[in-house]
Length: 247
Ligand SMILES: O=C(O)c1cccc(C(=O)CC[C@H]2O[C@@H](n3cnc4c(=O)[nH]cnc43)[C@H](O)[C@@H]2O)c1
Image 1 (cartoon, rainbow, N blue to C red):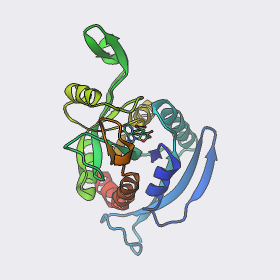
Image 2 (cartoon, rainbow, N blue to C red; image 1 turned 30 degrees about the vertical axis):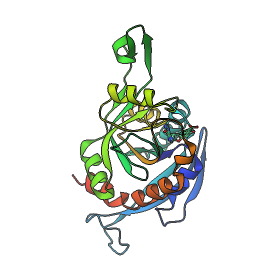
Image 3 (tube, protein in one colour; image 1 turned 30 degrees about the horizontal axis):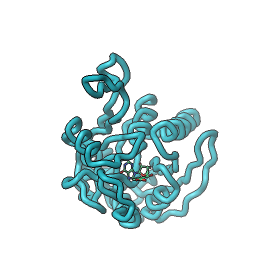
Image 4 (spheres, rainbow, N blue to C red; image 1 turned 60 degrees about the vertical axis):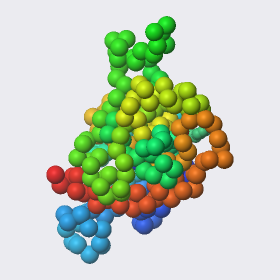
């Protein structure tokens, strides 16, 4: 589970009651905890058929490059010790596009799209794929997106990754014109997804909305509410994960 900053990692950690331990790796420091998963998708502790899923929480850094580097380090370490990850989740607060993603709501990405990787031309922006290389979108497993959205009440749509936070109505409108399904923007999802894709691991992105995408207005931020929404969402995560794995 890769967040940008420790406050987001700790919000996710509060959803998992087991005491965790710190694991130091070259290029990444993990907080390792567990969540009970079982055949029935319950979270009760008495079922002997249940196994504990290991969950590594990583404050991977702000921005797509740092997030990709730290996530890649964690993925490589896990693979080299013979315990590769089944899933990578990019999680954090984010900006919400009105009216689809109001403050405090939760968005699960069905497409993780980088919005500003490409070339500016006289005729407008060209994504890197139209220049003949790379990728601009990663798609999380549909059934997982569905299961997590149903369990958490999240909305589903495109989550954009940007290197520059949108700060004007004009930029927000331009992004929505180019990405009509966009519900949210953050700064790490695509980087985390690139690292996961490079090692063949599925990826998911979850954003709790802390501010509207648009004109800069720090007074409008609701970071506490968004962090609380993250904790609540990850409290419902283990059963959703189990229902996905059993499909
Ligand atoms: O100074 C500003 O105007 C401003 C507005 C929104 C966010 C920031 C940040 O520095 C936070 C970046 C951090 O949080 C995620 N995040 C939260 N809201 C947004 C957003 O509207 N657009 C992009 N990223 C956002 C992001 O993933 C970073 O980890 C500053």
